[in-house]
Structure formats: structure tokens, C-alpha cells
Image (cartoon, rainbow, N blue to C red):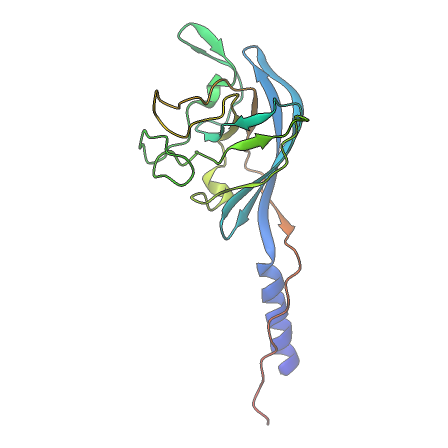
Length: 195
């Protein structure tokens, strides 16, 4: 009996040790279309929110706006008579229709992520947490966007201040896989009363 309980607890623990994640390839984008791959971002569900762990190269050094956009496309689209890189991705993901750009901790767009930092070698490899996004299902069918500008995370002096043009984009598909988290200690063995 004791072995049976221990086996059930071990199975339950192992099932809980899986993290839902998706590895998303990012490509350069222009007003002509989608270009070469510049790496990927692994998106993982954590207890603190979605973690975005970039492994990107060939970006200009500095701080860049990083957002989830409403539509799952990286294709160009016409805006005011001009082709816009990844314009088919639409605006920032805002399911509550707040119309506000307040950053990842604000109450505005849910697609506002912390800034993406690119080092002097053009590499972005520092993970960020989006605390208001909890599951991959929330962002499935959307686009992940890198902007040229540093993003003021505000609507002043104008809407989406300083986010700028879109050099890189990824479509967040519906293919979710699980990957093991780091090993966790086993829970204490329950003590059964003596027979």
C-alpha cells in the first residue's frame, strides 16, 4: 500500500514538472516581405508569467520595443499608401480594447513586453518576463515583434512613442510542446499509520 501511494505521488510530481513552451523563429522583415532568420525566442509558462528567452543576432545594439501584435502575420501591408514591414501584424495586442500603451506592468495593451536589450555584438540573449501574460494560449495566433526604437512605454508625446519601425517578426503558431523543467526535489514521503 505504501509503495502504491509513493508511486502515485511520484507520477503526480513528474506530471507537474513539465513547463509548456514554444520555440519561435524570428525573421528579418522589410516592406518587400519576410527575410532571413535571425534566431529564435523560447516562450515558457512560468509562475511569474510568460518568459521570453531570446537567442537573436544581427540586430542593432541598444534597447528595442518588444511586443505581441494582434494578428499572426509578418507580411507587409499598405498603410497610408505605403508598404509597411510586418504591417499585416496589426497593432499591439489589446484584447480589452484599452487603447493605452502603459508597458508590461500597466493596465493598457496586454502585448506590451519589457524592452529587448541587444548587446554591442548585435546579440539579444537576456530573458524577460511578461507578468500579465500567463499562458501560451493567450498569444497563439499573434505575432511577436521587435521594433527599432527603444519604446518609451507610453502614449506621449504620441501613440506608441518611439517604438519605431519593425525589423524582425515571428508568428506565434498553435504548436505547443512541453519541455522538462529543472529537476525538483521529491515531496516528503507520507507516513502511514502502522497496521
